Image (cartoon, rainbow, N blue to C red; front, side, top):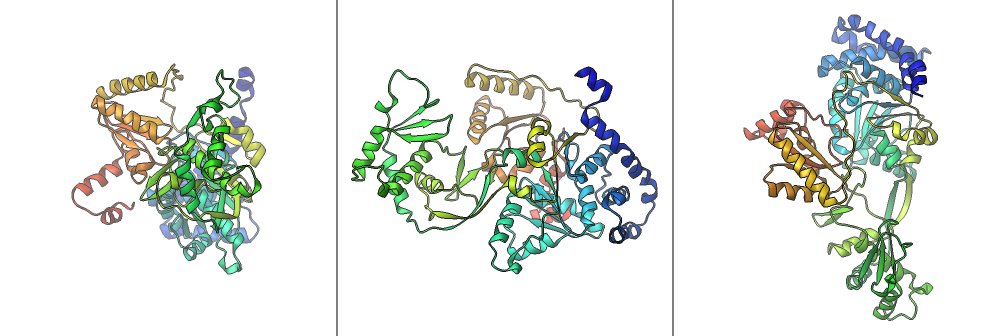
Length: 540
């Protein structure tokens, strides 16, 4: 296989070879376009629109449109897309996935196909993984679009319906996958056409495409209405379940010498993520609620509440699956570690957790509309995406979305050394080794970024570092607001940053620290308000 690859090249190499002439055309225009005045460069946008109306295609005007956007980015942002970034932009325009390593400037790459496709007048959606990135990119990259005469919209959690409609009417709309999906559901529930906010699904560029289209593909977005169910029963049932004894097993199929039913009221199968009452537990329930048979049809509601209560206590873990903040239970996204404001577990599980945590139990809801991310993103006429890791899901992308992947080389040779995995017999041994490695690097002044899988693990590691006297930052869903700032400074000399896998997306980690955030920190020390800092730097 290696010999064949050397002779004929892999599929990505062949695609890059085919794209090379287009990139050459774009770069050949650089000298001409750099001599244009701002007014002449801005006049290109109406010119391109006119040419499209006269029968030319987006592919026909691609070299000139990319050259225009490239020059605008240089004048407005001081950044001119490199050759590999031009390749990435072409891949995205073609409705494919561009696999580009972390730090290769995917945010800037997206401006090229977004500008080109926005000229068609049907709207371009740029999808990011969180509100912070959507807002940042719409303001930052939005300067390029506005310079060229295009409008930019933003759709995040706290945008009102009227503003949403104007955001979708813009040439380019930035937002999160959750908001785009929920707006689609709300539009389908609208009574009058005037209440709808979206205007169609022409072209989408999805950042972290593997996370959204594969990891979260089957995640249902649910719009629910208030049900008639009383919330008092959740508290009553939780008080009952709190007195039961649970037993954890690796799997219910595991053969044990001792019958687990004999010493437990419910069994927690951690592998299958299920919780079931034992015969002893059922008997206790029947006694507590004065029932003849818990399995009778008339006891279905109570049985459901008990099942959700033992699930809340047996499976759902605080600071891993959810956090309690300001008297609310907020779900933690299992893939990104970010807090999912406005999202609730369905079928009464959220209420069961609220009862367990002794916060206000909200009235149970009923499902009014639902769609998965997989089905939503398949609505787009053209879909593309960017990520640093897509090849591992190549088959799924091809089968489900008919998307192929092109691996794009780095602008400069990759200097990072990827070491093989190290496996330990026990978790305690692993953590001691991690702390030892951190201590060794810290003494030499090397910046260290440590990734953990949950809030609980990040805080456990933090406690071990504290005992060793190693100063460090902790980034998890509890410190969501400080995410960008903490990650940006992870490259400072001697810094140690412990983070859940939410960290690092869209924020550059630079050796010595991120100059922009260092400047902001100095301005805050000087007594300037965040509003004045935002005005001075151009960023919130």
